[in-house]
Image (cartoon, rainbow, N blue to C red; front, side):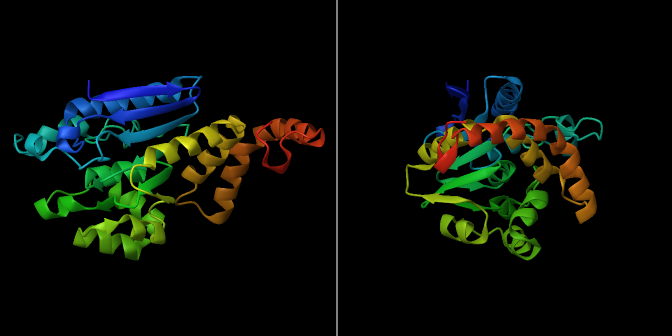
Length: 262
């Protein structure tokens, strides 16, 4: 097994463990990661997932040794993306999954090529100060096929995305933090710790409401302001009842001053 799951309360840490390849992705790992995140999403006891690569590397991309054994584009037919199946497995595994729960990427070392696309797939990215991203597959003439051209512009803007994608240059953790490519910057060795700390904070909050807001953010791309706001209302209206209950708890002193007592 190249993928492990460690569960603590409602936080799952999903671990890719191919350290001898800097966690490069092969078909076995892709299937196991895809299945692990699907299992997380349907498990009622799970709230937040942390995605971490064992051995000091998040993911060095698609396994080029495996790729070199393929011949012709038909070798990738298994990954075709029919319109009627939005959650079909991708070459990098879970990058097409549209989960109902948040994922936090804990990034050490390289998150490059397809590994960068996996980091972009997450909701929040925590990078160690020695880690880095980059479209390193540019060097081999391999395109981005796991959402990189879609998600990167949405995070950092089209101009910055063009620069990073067309040049294939290294993006340090410091630069990533400055341009909004990651949300947290931590010392070397602390990414998993910080990601799990965040996951536990989020897991303590009212989950249904949080997931509604997350769904609204995820589904507003391409909509006009009015359509996006109607979408927000349609998604979140049902949560108002729960919010009123929360307001009553607040009135009684619950959750004040940042308390996690909801």
